Image (tube, rainbow, N blue to C red; front, side, top):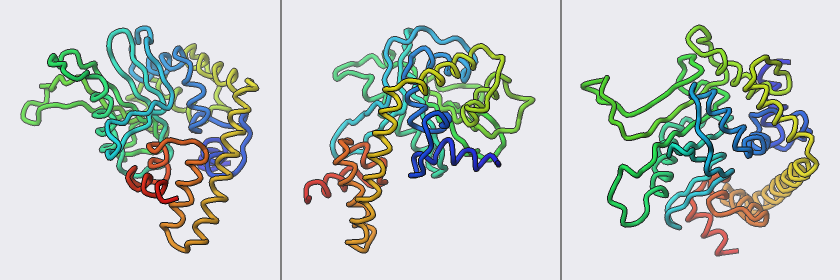
Length: 289
């Protein structure tokens, strides 16, 4: 069985409608990734591998964290967001589909996080915490074959001069090929993301993450949440299909999806992100139904 087949079965099949048991999912699946990283210590361990340094104690942690500054402007939903005691905010997201807009999306994510970090009336911008946005991708966004692409703001005229704005954006590629230039621990971690069930390792940190995966998969409550999520998604597809056929146009399909997601209790931000339309359009549909 090829890599793409395994990925589709274990990582994305459950999200596209084909049933895959919880025990067969790998960490490219958003549900499993969220459940595993819901543990602050596991999240800290993963970040230590990615950044290649120690991370201090986690003092705030949230999963599927929503940020919205105004009803008419696009908000964001972060897979995992947490802050350490050294005043650095991290946001982490799994990305299985290359929609080619991740660089600008990372900019939007960083700006939204920054807005929430500064209180009204604050004049000392030194109090704005450092921010690191991380996308774990199952594809090579930039095409250079690297496992890791790290970006920060620097002067074009003096490349050694960093702006020092405290921001960093990291794009990881589970299918990199520059093994000789990359820390072996990071390579193993990225293989673990895409091939969780087949992964065998002597690395203590990665084994700690795998142990968390096993614990999540054996938890009856997690199994229940997974099944409920699947039922919601199946109902969504049926309703969206019926609405789309009834209307006979793209607007009808979008409306069906919006209404189905609303029935599931998703927020306007979440619905807009999933359907791929603006939050204003979501509100218009909800107001007219």
